[in-house]
Length: 204
Ligand SMILES: [Fe+2]
Image (tube, rainbow, N blue to C red):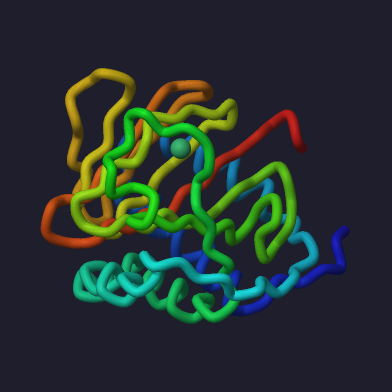
C-alpha cells in the first residue's frame, strides 16, 4: 500500500474533474476511459513544484475560467481547482511542425502538464493537463497512442481527422480512441480552455 499522500489542492482538482466528466459525458467509451484514468490515480506518486513558467497566452487564464465558474457545480470546482494550482504550473508550447495550425498558434497557446511526465505529480501511466488557446486559434492536428478525454471549460470546437467540427459546449467532453487524429480550435471571440486526461496502459 502506498504511503504517499496527494496534496489537498491537487486531489481536490482531480476529484472535481472526475465528477464533472461523470456528470457531463454520457458516452460509455468516455466513462470507461475515465474509470481507467482514476483507477490508476488511486495510487498517488510523489509531487514536485513546477517552476511557474508562463507564456503570453497565460494572461487569458482568468478569463478562460469564468464560464466554468458561472456554470457552478463540479465545473466550478474544476475551475477553482485550476486557480488554486495556477502558481505551481509550468506552461509550455507544443513544438514541432504544425502545418494544420493557424498562424496565431505559436503565441496563442499554452499547455501545462499537471499529472504526467514532468508534471506536478510526475508519472507515466496517466497524464492530466490543460490546453489554453487565445481567441481565433486552431491547434494542429495531432495524435498519440494513449486514449484521451477532453473536458471542455469554454466554447470551442473539436474534430477527428477530416470529420465535421463538433461543439461539446461548456462542461462537455470529447473522447479520442488510441491513435486517432484530432484537433481543437477556439472561437473568434473568447479564449479556450480544456482539461485533458490520458491513460497509457503500456506504462502501468
Ligand atoms: Fe490530444
